[in-house]
Image (cartoon, rainbow, N blue to C red):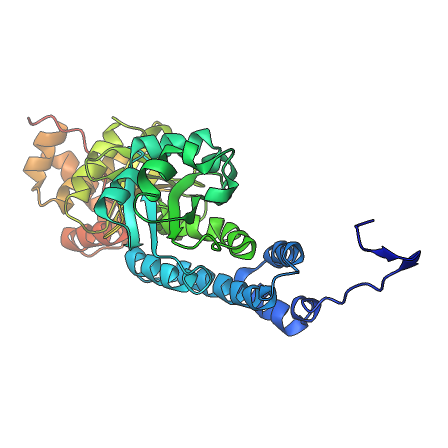
Length: 390
């Protein structure tokens, strides 16, 4: 029993909590759950309130934390450009943590380099240190990347001044406290970092720390450089196989989506897709793999890095057309004459004419121009036709 809970052999009455009406308010809980889809953050925050019940302001901090968490969740999941959302998130977090400097950055999945999303207050020199390889190594050493939990200066093991980032970077810049958290997605990938610094040692509070901790996944999605490409690929159809391409044409795996041997670096399919991607517009073509056929879509992702293009692939039935007929249709759609098609495929003009006649009949097309238009519209163009005319 805690000291002071007994007096002269009699138990003192339990001290009433002024926080239960806030936590147990069904309307508040319902509103919060509608925004965040979970009750867990409330449980964690209530525990924080319990730890600081002697503070004169925990109830107000709790209410602020709930409002900020809901608003940040809505901002982060919005459709505005990521930099605008990042700045709005920092403005909202400032209502909970009165910081003098803060930043959110994403981590390039290829290079591991920090890419700034939003920042205020930090000098270029401090930001350079926070984005350095040494700082990332320090986060690894402290387990910050592994846990996804925010760490304040006061939470560091031992004397904070034994930490070079505190002693050599943050203290000299005038910051007496602060917090660092690695941003993680639900599948465990570290996608970014948030840093907050204050001149007061009173902030961030326990409640504020726990509120920010429960925004880890939300902010992880915000910082995820693969997020837009992944959602774009998902929109192309359930069960799609897809890969991203960066600006140099290198393949990037898209989390949560299946891959395929044809979508790996160096394949002929990706080389054709890269050629289509330079036009910065949607493209679609057919690709054969032994007896299997796939419809490949090449979709540009404007404004999101490192992914510039998504290449999606779905199994498809080519219908009544044979492979040879698809080859003839593809070359006809490119504007080749029967003579040129015959030279490319090493077949006679009579055979080409026969194939064209069968194509028109099977597609119910009145002429070859209509058949070519149908092929382009429906994606019945082969990505590559093996030609023998040089």
